[in-house]
Amino acid sequence: MTSPADRPAVQAAAPRVAVLGGGIVGLASAWALARAGCRVEVFDDDPGGGASFAAAGMIAPTSEAAFGQEHLLAAGLASARLWPDFARDLEHCTGASVALQSTGTLLVASDHDDAAVVQRHTMLLDRLGLASQRLGTRAARRLEPALSPRLCAGVLLRDEHSVDPRRVVRLLLAALGSLGVQVRPTRARPLLAAARCVGVVTEPGPGRPVERVEADAVVVASGWSARDVVLPGLDLRRAVRPLKGQILRLRGEPGLLTRTVRATVHGDEVYLVPRPDGEVVVGATSEDVGVDTRVTAGGVHELLRSAVAVVPEVAELELVEATARLRPATVDNLPLVGATGTPGLLVAVGHGRDGILLTPLTAQVMTAAVLDAPAPRHAESLDPQRFAAERSPM
Ligand code: GLY
Image 1 (tube, rainbow, N blue to C red):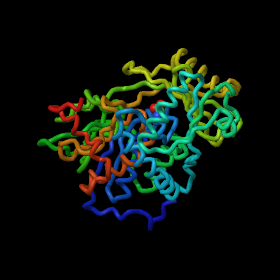
Image 2: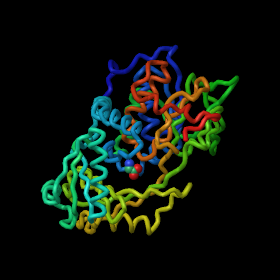
Image 3: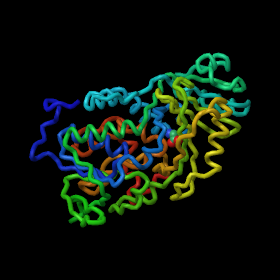
């Protein structure tokens, strides 16, 4: 647990920072800022209840790599390398285990067309100089005996991790509490005066009047709903859109799988992320359908059909939860992290499919931006000002 000696000395002149949004990105940024000596408050009426609640927690830059997304890959690789230290620091601060699993990812395919997809991905990794190990089906099944014998390709990506985002959110909240950071159960919006951001205005609620809170810096980290925050000079409505994901949580005896399995099944993508306690997370749909968080029969059917084709025993697991949430996607698939051009106003939004992966890097970039310190590598590609109202990145 954090001891008084571990706590940063908060100076009276330390910047006051308001973080709007208590998902994993907002909380980790708040934690990094508080550890850097800022006086931080977080505003969220349901901390950890948005995309972080659904996320499977893959820290998987190589399996998510795609043609033409080199900047995202570079940022993802950098952030994946930060994850072990981020987890250790959080463990040191809270005295609880993050349970980071570093057993890698296995890519598999269910037929020859799917195997061609996996092979193309492996060729992309080769071209980018990223390690992958091709396995025959038998070798893949030696690693994961629960895999169906009908699968026809296996590729091991050793350097990938996974984590339970709900646990990380809980630990971040505890870590913030131990640093005296308040998480206020209300939404808020930036307050502008004389062309700069001077604080936030809270939303009124039952028995809760509107409040103005002064801040030297405001970080908008409210996921897909950030597109409704009107910012001078930055077109978040054009940049950010909701991308629906449905995801399942199943439960059985621990050990059915020991690593993340990602499969292409007759053209559909599915992943199975095992947790040490026997939970298996099966995800996820990717639906460009606007603001819709309904769990649908078709979504659940598609995920279960694919998951059972990959690991037949999935059919015997208890179906514990079906969840739908909205990822904050962007039109160029890169998040917006940094200053906005309005003094005092910063954003950390648009993490799409990679919010958990990109959390430690985002927290570093955000801290450097607030404190006007040198930006970490890769920060440039995340610069929000590519969406300045008068410019277009696409
Ligand atoms: N990162 C996996 C997903 O968004 O479904």
